[in-house]
Image (cartoon, rainbow, N blue to C red; front, side):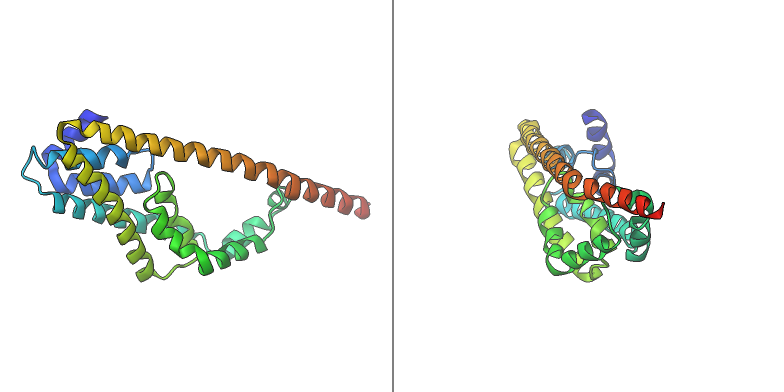
Length: 216
């Protein structure tokens, strides 16, 4: 993969960087931790300049974020409430009003998460979906996404540029951070699942059994 990115960016320059980062936002397994330091390093090997490398990477970030934001808009509150009100979802402990509560929280406190999460591996892409579902103001979404993406891209591209031939060290360190974040997400996820089973699924099943018994 490294050799493919190297050849692609060397041949197509800024457009390749913007395109790769755009796809990285939509398909997180494509590693920005590799693309950005490599792009910074290639400044010294090509006619590209560091400011334009950062600018095109940020353009790709914003466009990719807006694609996921648009997907989130399609997941309207009404559609989600209807989905969570199905028997299966109720058996899993969900309620239709969970959607309104989640969107309400996002309206009150979650919008700043767009800015913060743009600098966090893994979740930096996915945060755009709830922003779209909550119908976050598009101008504010663009501003937060721009600032957060610019910070992330500037740091990794600049470190790759400064590191020169040792740019892979930057990639390795960034990937280590990304791995640590993924492990933390898995641990938090397991804790949430355990809590959900105990306080949502088990009570929901008991409630359903009670209703079935009363129906008989």
